Image: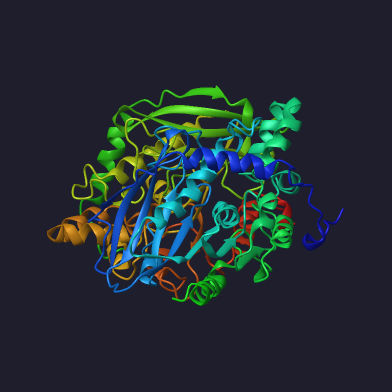
Length: 308
Length: 301
């Protein structure tokens, strides 16, 4: 049977009535934890034009989170800032490229990533279903908070113009960009590529590829937990957060994306409240979501909105 | 042929593989029911590599009567190893034995040694005897030995898949029938590092900035790993995934590698599309192994 065209797909995700109160409670809990940030120059990773710092800060449950902070060496006034959020499998890169463009840039490693995995390490596969039957213990609760607190780190930096902070990511980074843009009013512009963590319950019926396949694996072994799993995931679904986004945002998707199905990309975009939003669709592209061509669009978008 | 192939290249790798042979693999296989499907059974395999280091691999075996062709995912450049690559249809496990190795330093094989990213590319690089990639190449060879020993595997149809390590494994060990590989780090490493500011090759630039006098010695170490030097030993049918046109590893620039490979070679130049490039590779593997059509993920059908 032919598939429904992705832009006609109707998502099963419903925003939970208690979403806001749940996250208000989580963020209240997080706010009580001092950031306790440490920033140390890393000479080995600091080329002639960029200074690279290793950063560590505290997050929910006392988990120590790592990140790479890069600054252009030539800077005379306050800088626009970028928060880069990582994909599911890869390690957060040292973002020399963004610093070279003129941004103060912070690349975070949420819990479970290398350098942030001493206290929390569910593995891959594993993270997506870690403690998935309870929203209060689900692995992504702390993971999302770790990402949001990346903004708090940027706010502590004297060289950052706090009115010009962006967030950018692709795949899991695309999903995190949506969550951070929704939850942190300091975000002035956002770019989300091939957003993962959006439409979990849709995706497991649309694709048999990992990482979403982890949920199918889990439900195959624990069929009686389906209701709890679906309840939990709704509290972490980018579609539930999307209507809170009001900043300018660009989203790009691949129409043959076999990892984050385009159906979910259309749906999350439709739910974003921003007046200034644009969806870029790339036919005959998979999870790359047209990145080769789209990277220039992202650069121009942030340059315009963060007054680079 | 590489212009930097060391005179004692065969000796170096002969010694390495001789050393490996002294450590029996001693595989332990355990069920991983979480990753089972209706059509395949999942296992975790622990086995020994060079220096008594315990390695790991995810193994999946189709249900039904074998033997089955096998896809061996060799070590890539990152800490995470998954049962099958992200984006591949899980249904491929109904047709193929899949084997995905966690070489030393990667998750599930990161005790006592946990690799850093960035960092691995230059770990121990000033001494070719202790360079970490030597151990990892030997780990990939050991993985092939473990896979071949499985009775469910059709040993006439084993595909090595990955990046540089797939090529090194094909050059160093016999037993595979095909290789699908994208040279990314071990092709003219020193030369290409000078033309980039992006990781992982940037690791070389970082290292040289702090260790200026080390250039000659690390070039010497890397010459033992250059895929062009391993190419004459690659006698299997090969799909070489080149970079996009006008990149440092486009089809034209890879010519010195392509012509040095002993077996038949197909070169596919990237079209900057995971879909187009993936479709080409999946079709190639499927047809090479004698199947009418590949098993594609839903959004590629």
